[in-house]
Image (cartoon, rainbow, N blue to C red; front, side):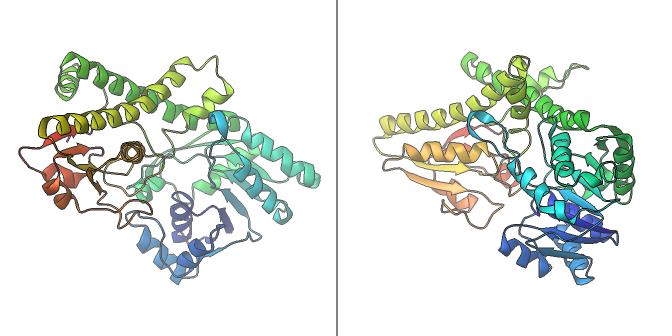
Length: 397
């Protein structure tokens, strides 16, 4: 068996490395030549525990290779981004381009799987494109959808042990895809149809977004009511059937902050709670930025000088280097747009450098700061102790 994975990012590379680790030949495809070059050297271009070791071993054994074009294979995995156009409409052009690129390589018996987050009906639309150009392959190849459901920072473990939902365009496709994933997944494989599998991925992350929106809305209410939201949630969760999540400075990442729009775009009238949750979580980031600007103004009035401000964290969640859709990064950008003569110290301990911001070590930033705004709950920040400083704690540090 030979597998071609199109898209070697945060999901494509770990998935390819895992498959190759199970002695299956994998060819990874990426449009970025530097990514291809890095992988072929046995190195990685993203940060993920245990990934570097697996990539190094599989490349050394010749089981994992990378290139900028697809090769004839038995299995094709589509793991490319699905960004947004205007008005939060999902853009499946990358999935379509990846699909069209492999159509000449398809042969009878092949298995085509989309893992990219996609609007409901995408797998069926890609099947139509394939069969329009290659009608002789109708009912001769398997086409299915199988979304990933992993947590950055624990991807290599969860790719193996998490349950997977697999939905084909017909029963033959579903069973063939299930047989493929059973080669390297130890979690249970749940079968359904393609549309349900697509909606399942969107539902999982939309559910999380709604739950986080409740916590974030609660934090806004408590701030106005003079109540410690962290103490409140801790007490409320003593109820045996209550489990309120922790609020933050918004919602980020390529899944929870994005996937609900795949539903609201196609079903705007029906998705009232889902749409409102997106509004609340986006507003929370704006509100946090406004609180920092307010604190800056009050410090200047009280002390007669501009403050030094430490903005703590850029990643979208604690203890990772992933900045995709990060609310913390938005807050930093928003605050710096209003910068005058203050000193700013931008902190992100999980990355070495940022293409826009000069980064400062967290201990140095706190030592120099008059205002410390915790945007992300990184583990390093929990050891910080400093008196006589204005602390804005949006992460429950």
